[in-house]
Amino acid sequence: MRIAMVSEHASPLAALGGVDAGGQNVYVARLSEELARRGHHVTVYTRRDAVTLPERVPLPGGAVVEHVPAGPPQSVPKDELLPHMAAFGAHLARAWGRDRPDVVHAHFWMSGMASQLGARPHGIPVVQTFHALGTVKRRHQAWRDTSPPARIGIERQLAGTCERVLATCSDEVAELAAMGVRTARRVSVVPCGVDAGHFRPGATGPAVPPRRAPHRLLACGRLVRRKGYDLAVRALTRVPDAELVVAGGPAARLDHDQEARRLWHLAHRAGVA
Image 1: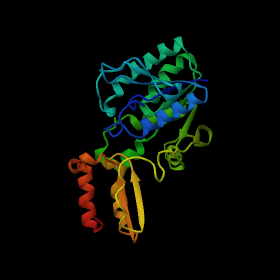
Image 2 (image 1 turned 135 degrees about the horizontal axis):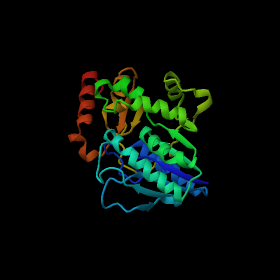
Image 3 (image 1 turned 180 degrees about the vertical axis):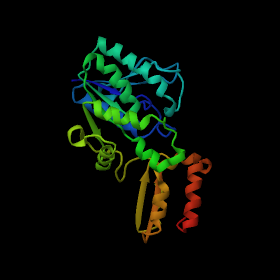
């Protein structure tokens, strides 16, 4: 099968830990690599964000990343990319007119826009994974939410016009239903996987701090406020004989990291530092 992955801001080649480089990048990279290893022809389309990037870059397993010219060839915050999705979609339409994929898998809402623009002229089915929904972001971030105002309406439209929505959990299905999406007909739940070869006891990696309590809680991810590590810190006050390790590195910069300092202050105030 010929599969097109579209991930407009989250390149599978990006260094993890940056402002817009995290779980989606890993998800797209590993899914593309595994599908290629199983014999499928996989091309990942992501926005060119540097002049020096080659047009095509191979991934392990045989998948290929193609850099799409859409907007300036420089880093642009993802919430400012909406005006460039028409150009992204036009590029996809031209590319797929020459080399038609059997299916398109769009990652994130703006990728869904570009994918449907590119796929519609050729009758290519589009599968949508949102990775995050604007309704949830607005509810939890309030005034900190920098998403374009049109995001929620566009997500609702995309969910109603794609071939299938692949939600990552049942909570996402409930959110889509609340948005008016007919989830029974259009949505399937495919949970995110875990790389058990990497996240396992004894795996090589950064030095693990010595255990100071009988039980250890672990939270992994980028050190950004919206990830909710403060909830883990507050929960620790209710778990006896336990400690919390937040794996969000890199350790060399933690003393200067604003979110790390905020969590330390919170832990001191909560009496669990």
